[in-house]
Every structure is written in structure tokens, then in C-alpha cells.
Length: 176
Image (cartoon, rainbow, N blue to C red):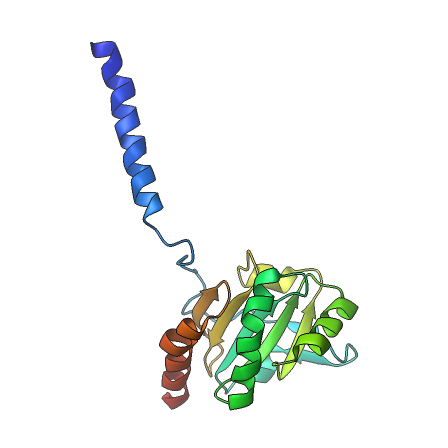
């Protein structure tokens, strides 16, 4: 009887961990960057590679950084919402084109619309690594001081925009 006790105990403990894990939301992954300065970047603009955009250029404003790629199916899902958002002027939206070919990315924006004030090219994915990106799309809310205040994993949805992103942007806009 005792020889079955240890395997049974191990099974019960592992089952408990599995049950807890199954109840977690995979889209809720805490980012160690929340509350910390956004990593610096200085990248070529997608539409004009001879010109550059740096994170430092965006200080003093609240902005969203949307990490996207032309090969990303989920990016296509959120894109119409981002196009509509850009028309409202409620928030400044910048794009980080991640591990993509420039021609493919430009063609994608021509086809589906370009919601970004500017989009930069992260062809090597190094800036994405600095931001802790492990899948596209991801969207970051960055405050006037250049601090990351929120990370949206996966496509922006009407609900996440209404319930989380826009209220946070409005709150940050009111801050000194």
C-alpha cells in the first residue's frame, strides 16, 4: 500500500497545478516593463527609410506603439479598428513593423489603410526584443515621460479599446 502513496501524492499535486494553470487567462501576462521607461529606439521610418524616428522624439505626449507585421493574421483582425481609431484623433498611434520586409509592409498598408502617424522598421526584431515582444500584435501605452503604462497582448478589440486603452490614455493626458 505504501508503494502507491508517493505516486498518488505526486499525481494529486501535479493535477492541482494543472487545474490552476487552466484557469489562467493566457492574454494576461504581466510585463516587467510596466512602470519603467520605454526602451530607446532610433529606427528608419518605413515609408521614408532615409529618415528616422526615435523614442526620444515622442516625449511629452501620450502615445500607443502598435507592433505589427504584414505576415501576421491577428494584425489583420485588429487593423480596421486601428484605422477607425486613427480617424478619431483620440490618441497618437505609432507602428513598429516587426521582422518584416519593407515592400511587403508598405503593400499591406496600401491595401488595408495606414492608421499610423509614422511606422518604423524593426527588420531584425531587436527593438521588439527590448520591448519584450514575443508575438504580434502587441500594443503599448506610453505616457508623456516615456514610461510604459500598459501592454496589450494580442489584437486590440473594441472592448479593450473602450474599457482599458482609451480610459488610460485619457487619464494620462490629464497628468502633468
